[in-house]
Length: 377
Image (tube, rainbow, N blue to C red; front, side):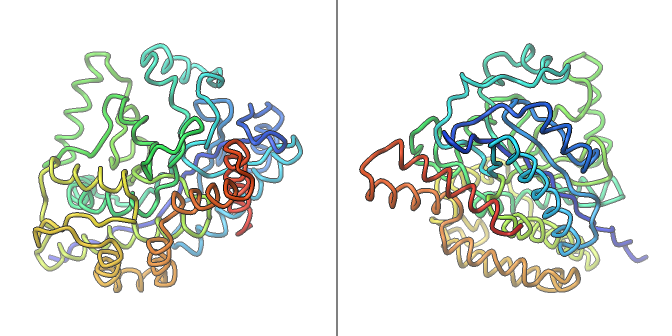
């Protein structure tokens, strides 16, 4: 009996930081900004935990080409409305120099509860991420693909790293965001689940104890969505460039279909222990695409550009199916350039060499991020 093919629709959620165009520091988004965005975008825009953040989400899209038009519209609206208040959005997972102690959380019940429940841990949550939803109607298929897709999460993270700076210092990491986020409970790589029922039983245990309200409080790098019949990838840093966000979404969509396609031939991707996958996750967090990841089948560390080529070969039929061969191929350029973390460090180095001033160089990084946000609009 043939295995029914999921829709593999995609949806992209992005969180942005709002910066003052004079000081380049983070700035609280005025209510008028959110209200104006909501008039135009309706339910596709919402506030985030911090007042200096704003979140958008695309509609359900069949292809990346469809997602591009929606994402461009969303980004353009936020940028246009922010400019009216002398603000600009940046799509980086950490602000280069602003201090979390100076920020206030959004005054909503959900966020006030988080602040109370998670105490000092959540007060440092001055970070932004990118989530990609892939439509998979069958719950057990969703769970099975979660187990297999986990192998590729470090590869997606390495391509996405956009948070090398934190509170005015170069952290030495390509992705500092996870260093903050992983302090929350129920984060990290997902555990192996044999079925969707097992996932539901595990969630119900915590819900029945009053520990969490629902599965939206499970913040794994990859999870069955609490709202939609989707598998939700949450591993990636948000992307300064819109086209790079679309590349990551295209890769996630094509990888999901590739793993489903294996099942149609009675095959599956080998599932490795979370302990081993966590080592690759750390390597991606530390180095981005500038160092290799472990190929556990070969038993060696492989240069990242080679791994990208191998992934593109694996998903060629699937990217072709979604007409996203051009988008996934951009992953080669992302890897070669060192990703956003590499570009931010280059912007800092150039400005510091020119001015000899640390603060001015950090301002230049913010200007670089503003420019990249606007370049595809």
